[in-house]
Length: 315
Image 1 (cartoon, rainbow, N blue to C red):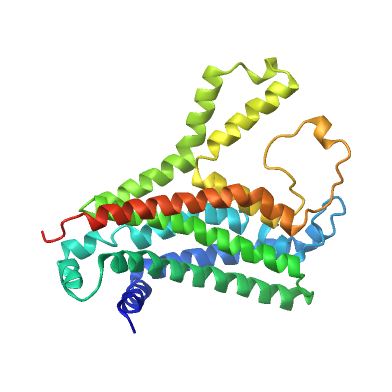
Image 2 (image 1 turned 90 degrees about the vertical axis):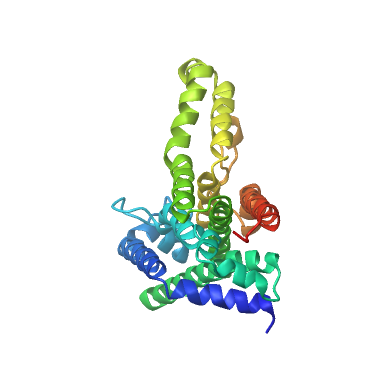
Protein backbone atom coordinates (compact mmCIF):
# COMPACT_ATOMS: atom_id res chain seq x y z
CA UNK A 1 0.00 0.00 0.00
CA UNK A 2 1.54 3.31 -1.08
CA UNK A 3 1.72 6.50 0.95
CA UNK A 4 -1.39 8.16 -0.46
CA UNK A 5 -3.59 5.19 0.49
CA UNK A 6 -2.15 5.14 3.99
CA UNK A 7 -2.84 8.84 4.44
CA UNK A 8 -6.41 8.55 3.15
CA UNK A 9 -7.11 5.60 5.46
CA UNK A 10 -5.73 7.60 8.37
CA UNK A 11 -7.95 10.57 7.58
CA UNK A 12 -11.05 8.41 7.21
CA UNK A 13 -10.43 6.57 10.48
CA UNK A 14 -9.69 9.79 12.37
CA UNK A 15 -12.91 11.43 11.23
CA UNK A 16 -15.08 8.38 11.84
CA UNK A 17 -13.87 8.14 15.44
CA UNK A 18 -14.36 11.83 16.24
CA UNK A 19 -17.37 13.04 18.23
CA UNK A 20 -18.08 15.99 15.96
CA UNK A 21 -18.46 13.65 13.00
CA UNK A 22 -20.83 11.40 14.96
CA UNK A 23 -22.94 14.42 15.97
CA UNK A 24 -23.12 15.66 12.37
CA UNK A 25 -24.03 12.20 11.10
CA UNK A 26 -26.84 11.92 13.66
CA UNK A 27 -28.11 15.38 12.67
CA UNK A 28 -28.17 14.60 8.94
CA UNK A 29 -29.73 11.15 9.47
CA UNK A 30 -32.47 12.65 11.66
CA UNK A 31 -33.10 15.33 9.04
CA UNK A 32 -33.28 12.71 6.30
CA UNK A 33 -35.63 10.54 8.36
CA UNK A 34 -37.96 13.45 9.13
CA UNK A 35 -38.05 14.58 5.49
CA UNK A 36 -38.67 11.03 4.28
CA UNK A 37 -41.47 10.54 6.82
CA UNK A 38 -43.23 13.73 5.71
CA UNK A 39 -42.79 12.80 2.03
CA UNK A 40 -44.13 9.29 2.59
CA UNK A 41 -47.11 10.64 4.55
CA UNK A 42 -48.07 12.95 1.67
CA UNK A 43 -47.05 10.62 -1.14
CA UNK A 44 -50.58 9.46 -1.96
CA UNK A 45 -51.91 12.97 -2.49
CA UNK A 46 -48.82 13.99 -4.48
CA UNK A 47 -49.06 11.02 -6.83
CA UNK A 48 -52.81 11.47 -7.19
CA UNK A 49 -52.53 15.11 -8.26
CA UNK A 50 -53.45 14.98 -11.94
CA UNK A 51 -52.34 18.60 -12.45
CA UNK A 52 -48.74 17.70 -11.58
CA UNK A 53 -46.66 16.58 -14.61
CA UNK A 54 -44.26 14.80 -12.25
CA UNK A 55 -46.90 12.61 -10.60
CA UNK A 56 -45.53 9.43 -12.18
CA UNK A 57 -42.06 9.87 -10.67
CA UNK A 58 -42.78 8.13 -7.39
CA UNK A 59 -39.23 7.99 -6.01
CA UNK A 60 -38.50 11.58 -6.93
CA UNK A 61 -41.59 12.53 -4.94
CA UNK A 62 -40.01 10.91 -1.88
CA UNK A 63 -37.26 13.52 -2.09
CA UNK A 64 -39.39 16.54 -3.00
CA UNK A 65 -42.89 16.13 -1.49
CA UNK A 66 -43.60 18.16 1.63
CA UNK A 67 -46.58 19.51 3.57
CA UNK A 68 -44.71 22.78 4.28
CA UNK A 69 -44.07 21.75 7.89
CA UNK A 70 -40.43 21.03 7.07
CA UNK A 71 -38.50 21.54 3.81
CA UNK A 72 -37.62 18.57 1.57
CA UNK A 73 -34.29 16.85 2.01
CA UNK A 74 -32.41 18.64 -0.81
CA UNK A 75 -33.37 22.02 0.70
CA UNK A 76 -32.09 20.84 4.07
CA UNK A 77 -28.82 19.76 2.44
CA UNK A 78 -28.35 23.27 1.10
CA UNK A 79 -27.90 24.37 4.72
CA UNK A 80 -26.40 21.27 6.36
CA UNK A 81 -23.88 20.20 3.71
CA UNK A 82 -21.65 23.30 4.13
CA UNK A 83 -21.63 22.81 7.91
CA UNK A 84 -20.64 19.17 7.44
CA UNK A 85 -17.81 20.12 5.08
CA UNK A 86 -16.57 22.96 7.31
CA UNK A 87 -16.59 20.72 10.38
CA UNK A 88 -14.50 18.11 8.56
CA UNK A 89 -11.95 20.49 7.07
CA UNK A 90 -11.50 23.64 9.16
CA UNK A 91 -8.60 22.18 11.21
CA UNK A 92 -7.17 19.72 8.71
CA UNK A 93 -3.77 21.42 8.39
CA UNK A 94 -3.40 23.89 11.27
CA UNK A 95 -4.25 21.29 13.92
CA UNK A 96 -1.45 19.08 12.60
CA UNK A 97 0.96 22.01 12.67
CA UNK A 98 -0.05 23.19 16.14
CA UNK A 99 0.24 19.66 17.49
CA UNK A 100 3.70 19.19 16.01
CA UNK A 101 2.63 16.19 13.91
CA UNK A 102 2.85 17.96 10.56
CA UNK A 103 6.65 18.08 10.70
CA UNK A 104 6.76 14.39 11.57
CA UNK A 105 4.49 13.52 8.67
CA UNK A 106 6.55 15.51 6.17
CA UNK A 107 9.72 13.88 7.55
CA UNK A 108 8.36 10.55 6.34
CA UNK A 109 8.85 9.46 2.69
CA UNK A 110 5.67 11.20 1.52
CA UNK A 111 5.06 14.27 -0.59
CA UNK A 112 3.26 17.39 0.52
CA UNK A 113 0.74 17.13 -2.28
CA UNK A 114 -0.13 13.60 -1.17
CA UNK A 115 -0.86 14.90 2.32
CA UNK A 116 -3.01 17.73 1.00
CA UNK A 117 -4.89 15.39 -1.34
CA UNK A 118 -5.55 13.00 1.54
CA UNK A 119 -6.88 15.84 3.72
CA UNK A 120 -9.36 16.65 0.96
CA UNK A 121 -10.28 13.22 -0.39
CA UNK A 122 -10.63 11.45 2.99
CA UNK A 123 -13.60 13.52 4.25
CA UNK A 124 -15.07 13.57 0.73
CA UNK A 125 -15.07 9.77 0.62
CA UNK A 126 -16.92 9.72 3.95
CA UNK A 127 -19.52 12.20 2.70
CA UNK A 128 -19.98 10.30 -0.57
CA UNK A 129 -20.50 7.05 1.35
CA UNK A 130 -22.98 8.74 3.69
CA UNK A 131 -25.10 10.31 0.93
CA UNK A 132 -25.07 7.12 -1.14
CA UNK A 133 -26.14 5.05 1.86
CA UNK A 134 -29.00 7.41 2.68
CA UNK A 135 -30.26 7.35 -0.90
CA UNK A 136 -30.08 3.55 -1.01
CA UNK A 137 -32.05 3.42 2.23
CA UNK A 138 -34.62 5.75 0.70
CA UNK A 139 -34.92 3.56 -2.40
CA UNK A 140 -35.25 0.42 -0.30
CA UNK A 141 -37.84 2.04 1.97
CA UNK A 142 -39.81 3.26 -1.03
CA UNK A 143 -39.78 -0.22 -2.55
CA UNK A 144 -41.04 -1.79 0.69
CA UNK A 145 -43.63 0.94 1.17
CA UNK A 146 -45.10 1.00 -2.32
CA UNK A 147 -43.90 -2.15 -4.06
CA UNK A 148 -43.35 -0.09 -7.22
CA UNK A 149 -40.21 -0.69 -9.24
CA UNK A 150 -38.03 2.35 -9.79
CA UNK A 151 -37.73 3.61 -13.34
CA UNK A 152 -34.27 3.88 -14.87
CA UNK A 153 -34.70 7.64 -15.42
CA UNK A 154 -35.56 8.14 -11.76
CA UNK A 155 -32.50 6.15 -10.73
CA UNK A 156 -30.17 8.26 -12.87
CA UNK A 157 -31.76 11.49 -11.65
CA UNK A 158 -31.29 10.45 -8.02
CA UNK A 159 -27.69 9.42 -8.72
CA UNK A 160 -27.16 12.83 -10.35
CA UNK A 161 -28.57 14.46 -7.23
CA UNK A 162 -26.07 12.52 -5.10
CA UNK A 163 -23.15 13.50 -7.36
CA UNK A 164 -24.12 17.19 -7.30
CA UNK A 165 -24.45 17.05 -3.51
CA UNK A 166 -20.96 15.57 -3.24
CA UNK A 167 -19.57 18.28 -5.52
CA UNK A 168 -21.32 20.92 -3.39
CA UNK A 169 -19.75 19.49 -0.23
CA UNK A 170 -16.42 19.31 -2.05
CA UNK A 171 -16.46 23.05 -2.67
CA UNK A 172 -16.99 23.90 1.00
CA UNK A 173 -14.46 21.27 2.02
CA UNK A 174 -11.84 22.74 -0.32
CA UNK A 175 -12.59 26.20 1.09
CA UNK A 176 -12.27 24.91 4.66
CA UNK A 177 -8.93 23.25 3.86
CA UNK A 178 -7.70 26.48 2.28
CA UNK A 179 -8.64 28.45 5.39
CA UNK A 180 -6.93 25.86 7.60
CA UNK A 181 -3.74 26.55 5.66
CA UNK A 182 -4.07 30.33 5.70
CA UNK A 183 -4.88 30.62 9.43
CA UNK A 184 -2.81 29.13 12.20
CA UNK A 185 -5.61 28.82 14.76
CA UNK A 186 -8.46 26.36 14.04
CA UNK A 187 -10.99 28.68 15.69
CA UNK A 188 -10.11 31.46 13.27
CA UNK A 189 -10.46 29.24 10.20
CA UNK A 190 -13.76 27.82 11.50
CA UNK A 191 -15.25 31.26 12.18
CA UNK A 192 -14.09 32.55 8.80
CA UNK A 193 -15.62 29.59 6.97
CA UNK A 194 -18.90 29.92 8.88
CA UNK A 195 -18.90 33.65 8.18
CA UNK A 196 -18.52 33.03 4.44
CA UNK A 197 -21.33 30.46 4.57
CA UNK A 198 -23.61 32.85 6.46
CA UNK A 199 -22.86 35.67 4.02
CA UNK A 200 -23.79 33.64 0.94
CA UNK A 201 -26.79 31.99 2.65
CA UNK A 202 -28.38 34.93 4.47
CA UNK A 203 -26.88 38.29 3.55
CA UNK A 204 -25.95 37.91 -0.12
CA UNK A 205 -29.56 37.81 -1.46
CA UNK A 206 -30.43 40.82 0.73
CA UNK A 207 -27.44 42.82 -0.53
CA UNK A 208 -28.19 41.93 -4.16
CA UNK A 209 -31.82 43.01 -3.90
CA UNK A 210 -30.91 46.27 -2.17
CA UNK A 211 -28.23 47.15 -4.74
CA UNK A 212 -30.35 46.22 -7.75
CA UNK A 213 -33.36 48.17 -6.51
CA UNK A 214 -31.24 51.24 -5.82
CA UNK A 215 -29.72 51.19 -9.32
CA UNK A 216 -32.54 49.99 -11.59
CA UNK A 217 -36.09 51.38 -11.89
CA UNK A 218 -38.95 49.89 -9.93
CA UNK A 219 -40.29 46.68 -11.57
CA UNK A 220 -43.81 48.14 -11.77
CA UNK A 221 -42.59 50.75 -14.27
CA UNK A 222 -40.88 48.28 -16.59
CA UNK A 223 -42.23 46.64 -19.73
CA UNK A 224 -42.49 42.86 -19.93
CA UNK A 225 -39.20 42.36 -21.79
CA UNK A 226 -37.40 44.78 -19.49
CA UNK A 227 -38.87 42.99 -16.47
CA UNK A 228 -37.60 39.66 -17.77
CA UNK A 229 -34.10 41.10 -18.21
CA UNK A 230 -34.38 42.65 -14.74
CA UNK A 231 -35.17 39.28 -13.17
CA UNK A 232 -32.49 37.52 -15.22
CA UNK A 233 -29.91 40.00 -13.96
CA UNK A 234 -30.89 39.34 -10.36
CA UNK A 235 -30.78 35.56 -10.88
CA UNK A 236 -27.39 35.69 -12.58
CA UNK A 237 -25.92 37.69 -9.71
CA UNK A 238 -27.49 35.36 -7.15
CA UNK A 239 -25.82 32.45 -8.93
CA UNK A 240 -22.50 33.72 -7.66
CA UNK A 241 -23.62 31.97 -4.48
CA UNK A 242 -22.77 28.23 -4.34
CA UNK A 243 -26.06 27.56 -2.55
CA UNK A 244 -28.05 29.05 -5.41
CA UNK A 245 -26.15 26.91 -7.94
CA UNK A 246 -26.85 23.81 -5.88
CA UNK A 247 -30.54 24.66 -5.50
CA UNK A 248 -30.94 25.26 -9.24
CA UNK A 249 -29.23 22.01 -10.18
CA UNK A 250 -31.07 19.77 -7.72
CA UNK A 251 -34.44 21.37 -8.47
CA UNK A 252 -34.16 20.58 -12.17
CA UNK A 253 -32.96 17.02 -11.61
CA UNK A 254 -35.57 16.13 -8.99
CA UNK A 255 -38.43 17.94 -10.76
CA UNK A 256 -38.42 16.86 -14.43
CA UNK A 257 -41.22 19.30 -15.32
CA UNK A 258 -38.96 22.29 -14.62
CA UNK A 259 -38.04 23.53 -18.09
CA UNK A 260 -36.18 26.75 -17.29
CA UNK A 261 -34.25 28.26 -14.41
CA UNK A 262 -35.06 31.83 -15.38
CA UNK A 263 -38.11 33.94 -16.16
CA UNK A 264 -39.87 33.33 -19.46
CA UNK A 265 -42.21 35.51 -21.48
CA UNK A 266 -45.72 34.66 -22.63
CA UNK A 267 -44.43 34.27 -26.19
CA UNK A 268 -42.00 31.59 -25.03
CA UNK A 269 -44.81 29.71 -23.31
CA UNK A 270 -46.98 29.52 -26.42
CA UNK A 271 -47.04 25.95 -27.69
CA UNK A 272 -45.17 24.57 -24.67
CA UNK A 273 -46.49 21.19 -23.53
CA UNK A 274 -46.62 20.72 -19.73
CA UNK A 275 -44.69 17.45 -19.75
CA UNK A 276 -41.53 16.26 -18.00
CA UNK A 277 -38.21 16.82 -19.70
CA UNK A 278 -35.93 13.97 -20.64
CA UNK A 279 -32.90 13.28 -18.50
CA UNK A 280 -30.61 14.57 -21.24
CA UNK A 281 -32.40 17.92 -21.46
CA UNK A 282 -32.40 18.32 -17.69
CA UNK A 283 -28.65 17.68 -17.62
CA UNK A 284 -28.14 20.28 -20.33
CA UNK A 285 -30.03 22.82 -18.21
CA UNK A 286 -28.05 22.18 -15.02
CA UNK A 287 -24.63 21.70 -16.65
CA UNK A 288 -23.61 25.38 -16.21
CA UNK A 289 -24.39 25.13 -12.47
CA UNK A 290 -22.51 21.86 -12.06
CA UNK A 291 -19.49 23.08 -14.01
CA UNK A 292 -19.45 26.29 -11.94
CA UNK A 293 -19.38 24.30 -8.69
CA UNK A 294 -16.62 22.09 -10.08
CA UNK A 295 -14.60 25.11 -11.21
CA UNK A 296 -14.97 26.81 -7.81
CA UNK A 297 -13.85 23.61 -6.07
CA UNK A 298 -10.82 23.28 -8.32
CA UNK A 299 -9.87 26.93 -7.79
CA UNK A 300 -10.02 26.58 -4.00
CA UNK A 301 -7.97 23.37 -4.11
CA UNK A 302 -5.43 24.90 -6.51
CA UNK A 303 -4.93 27.90 -4.22
CA UNK A 304 -4.56 25.53 -1.26
CA UNK A 305 -1.96 23.55 -3.18
CA UNK A 306 0.00 26.70 -4.12
CA UNK A 307 -0.02 28.12 -0.58
CA UNK A 308 0.76 24.82 1.14
CA UNK A 309 3.63 23.89 -1.19
CA UNK A 310 5.33 27.25 -0.59
CA UNK A 311 4.70 27.41 3.15
CA UNK A 312 7.36 26.92 5.80
CA UNK A 313 6.06 24.30 8.22
CA UNK A 314 9.08 23.91 10.50
CA UNK A 315 7.84 26.37 13.13
